[in-house]
Structures are given as C-alpha cells and as structure tokens.
Image (cartoon, rainbow, N blue to C red; front, side):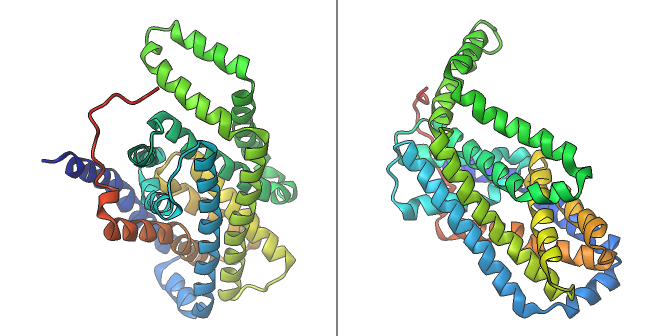
Length: 330
C-alpha cells in the first residue's frame, strides 16, 4: 500500500470517533430538550436567517485565513494564497481528532510545499489557536464581569495563554528551560524539535504579530457572535442589547470551554456550555436552548467540517501526502 493511502486511512480513522461523538451529542441535545418540543421550536425557526448566519461564519473563516496566511509570511513561507487556503480549510475536519492533535497534519502539508521544518509548522498551528483563545477571551470580558461565577475558568485559561506568550518572548528563560531539558534523559531526543518549535513561536508571538492576530481574531469571532444573536431572534427571542451581549458572551466563552476540554472539536463541552449558559442567562426554556445550540453548532462547527471534507474531495492529493524519506530538520 502506498504511503499516501496509509496516511489517508490514518486520518479517517482518527476522525471517525469524533464524528460518532458529534452525532451522539446531537441526539443528547434532542433528548434533553424533549425531541417533540425541540422539533417544534426548529419548525418555527425563521430559516431565512440561517443563510445570513452561515455568511457571518464565512466572514470568521476569511478573517482567520488572513491571519493564517500572515503567520506563514512571518515564517518566510512562500506559498501562494490559493494553496494556503486549501491547507487552512482542509484542516477544519482535523479539529474532530482528540485534543485536535490531527491539526499537526497541517504542519506536514506546509512542509511538503516549502522548506519549513514540521516543528516550525506546528508553531503556526499553535499560535493560531492561542491567538484565537485570547480573542474569544477578550470578547468574553464584559460577560464575565456581568456573571462573576465564570471568573475562575476565565482567569485560569487567560493566565495560561498569556503566560505562554510572555514566556516565549523571554528568550533567556525559554533557552534555560530547553537547556534543563537537555540534561533529562527522557527529553534529550525531543529537545532539537522543541528548539525548532520555540524559534517559530518566538517569531509569531512578538508583540506586533500577536496584537495583530488577536485584533483580527476578535473581529472574526465577533462575526459568529452576531450570527448567534440573529439565530436567537429567529427562534423568537426579543432582540436588544441584553440579548446581543449574552449571545456574544455565550458563544465566545463556550468556545474557550470546548477548546480547553481537549475533546474532539470540543464536542460535548461546547454544546453543554452553550445550552447551559443560555438556560442560566437568557432563560428561554430547555427546548429553545437545545434548538439554539443545535442550530449554531450546525452553522459553525459542522459547517466548517463540511467545508473541509469538501476540500478533501475536490483536492484528494491534499490528504494523500507522500512522506519524504528524510529526517525532519530541527
């Protein structure tokens, strides 16, 4: 069997558990809100709003792609934007893998199209995630102030993400930590790869780069928050500043919860967060909360998975990466 076929099969095997879990979560949402009640709420939904929600989701993806391509430029990777877009969108389904570990494949795709070592490519993937995390935390700030019960989780995640950025820029400290690792037998073999990863992270987390990435990420995730607000209106909830603020906060904070859960695609954690926070903050009833959660996840997360799988079908060579018989540079 050819190498690219083995890699393709491996990717699909890693995706399968997440896809099954996703289907199970959708069923649980229906059961929690009572299938008949949720079905009735969905039937009353103003479906003319749904394309607008999908469009706002696309705005999020476009802005995040600009950030992705900017990161490639920061690493001096010369890949034409259409090819870069294929890698970016093709990576969406990889979020379904446990801990989103499958997204490391994007670093392999970059390496196959440039001279960038895989370890430095991984730093791009990680930087993208950290900047997204800081962006959604920024969007969550006002909501956390209004609902102090969410402060512990907010502070915990914020300190970790910001701490990683700060430590990466204190070069002497980072090199000291790597030097200590070199003296630990179990870590010695990994240190060259970690050094390569650190060099990439150091460039991507410079003040100018991280501020640009977080600013762009904040605007992009705000677009999805607006989409969630419109979706709630489509379900019959009264519009206004209160609902808008709640919608942006709930979607942003649930994204954080889903990310730190390390579950495939945040499945389960994100849905429970959205439905639970809607119930506590907005009080629309169990059926509406379940329906809103179901619809927004279809319009955001599952929409991205469909776009990614569509990219795989259009460009099958994307996931059929051939392994070069050479040692990855450090």
